[in-house]
Image (cartoon, rainbow, N blue to C red; front, side, top):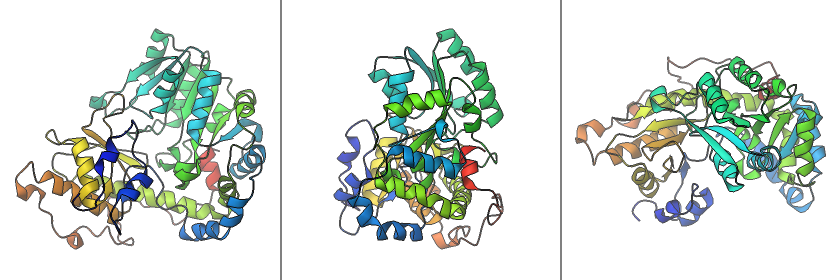
Length: 417
């Protein structure tokens, strides 16, 4: 296939996005794939941290990890949490699975669109899934009062919200989430999935983790793989009162965490400044990328507090065709949202990446768009004449300025302390 040699039929197999490894194996020699699909932190770990992991790789692969309780205690210590309120697992998806098996008995309410496992997992075990549709006219923002009324009308026994929500990037202020938890104190369970909340800069301490652990029926989920840019390790954790945390913890295998996850947990404390820097850089890039996407004629760009941006394509464009075109001709991998409940293939989720990668994405989208409209609308000025975003020291005037570093410990921010 012209351009990259990638067989785009890979993208049409299964309900989920193709893996990076499938695409890389299909690509021609020397082809670099720029991943705008998998929502990963591009600035963390740092190259120095990867070097440290590489030096210890032999021992990491050769020896058993510590048991999960020991790793969980270390994570709790780093984040300033009580270990009895934490359960750590092989990714947040494993925790969703166990929450479904052990804590969801009859029905669960979930706004859509959202992370697909929150609908798919209960469906697979025969639960009733009460889906609350978010509206495009509202920018897919969740009105908590309307959602609570829906939960009461449906008599749902479990309620879930994702904050920040995937794929629209909407954020609910902490005070409102706390009010939501208190309004539903009589339910079997309330779940707040905070897998992407570290990327939000709307509040200094956005997490409701400390509020969940003192309530009788609330769980907060965290995804370390997304935050730390290490999806391949598969590690996440949940916060809840000791009774709920113990219920999940006892069901998890004794060695459910691998040695690489253990190594990273023990590295976190030594690299707190680098992690905070990565979040500041990503916030800057999110604003810059949104501005660049808004230059594409006919594209609707939704505001986001995640490490991704939702866009709606022009009417004549096809999300499936654009995704395939970008991979085949530009080596750019994107997420088309046609298989997300509550969305169509006119929507795409674009992961926030550095400016040089965004230039490649925009060039590919302009290239695709030329087949639909008059050529001048998609003709570009040379990249080096654009607004200077490629220079990391040249920050646009309309971006929020951040301090060079934070004085408070990042684990506190992640845990909401």
